[in-house]
Image 1: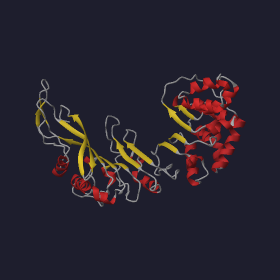
Image 2: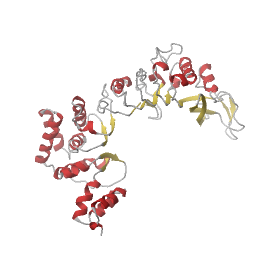
Image 3: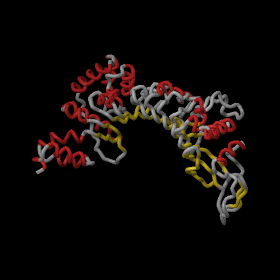
Image 4: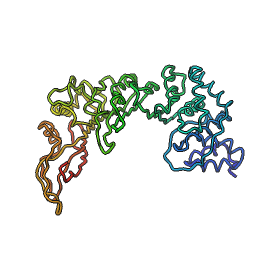
Length: 430
């Protein structure tokens, strides 16, 4: 019955199915259904990280044998879903792979010596510790209509993929990366001082860089966040969201002092469509000495924030010159209508701790607050002025609380408190 339906109806039915297995069931009804619907199965491919080498190899063989299927692939991204695949050695097809390599090398202007090194890695696909870069790099050259790609680029395991990226930057326009509509690159910058990969798109809309501290980091492994500014500046006409921030909840929130990069990223005044900005306090301004109160900065928020800004998130407020930064935030709130007419949300992520002597609930014993995260009256006054009453006595029986996050929302010419995240203070005063 299904095999007799018009092609348009079969494609419409397949379009409503979310599971590839259901589409395959219909495709198995007849040769006609298989020829029509099997390319639909390959439109969006989700590879499993555990079995990726074999999946990539089978996909390369499949699209090589049938170029029509290669044209059907639109999406390629990883999945975390559980699965099982029995182990077996992959039979390396030397002649086929060599011809594909030559075509890929010609398209990307890769030298012969690099092609030979690339082929050697491909031949070692069953070797222990063999990386995925050689196979990803080859596959990308075979998918002419790919529109969405999610890819991890980690040195030294993805050297060949990185080589493709470099050639795409050096020869823009003709490479597959220039035709992608959506590209997500998780790049390990541990050994780089360049933001490779950011120059691939002419219409980059969103960029996130999250750096963190690990026990393995050394000062030479830390990339300077300001190195992203130059490639981002080239996308200033299209980029709408930028986030450059520090992730501290690693290794039990232990900071080894290696990844705290205090350098100023740059001004976003010339980014006409930038709507959302998330940055650490020590990267958003050019501080004279961020660790020493009273020295201030060489610029102001007015010198940094674009007029188009709609939402601003500041982190690391406790690691900057409180007095200076508080004054800047006060001016931001006061002059938003004049300088940032579209600014509607201001988020400050910080530890604003209540001061005072209080008693914990029954059975917990006396509790005395011995430390505060607000070392200056100006910061405390600013927080209080927008509606967080730090000096308000907690209700009877409550523990002392800490404001670790607050968000403000602007309507017309006035601001109001939108959300507060409260955390119970630890019983030991820490």
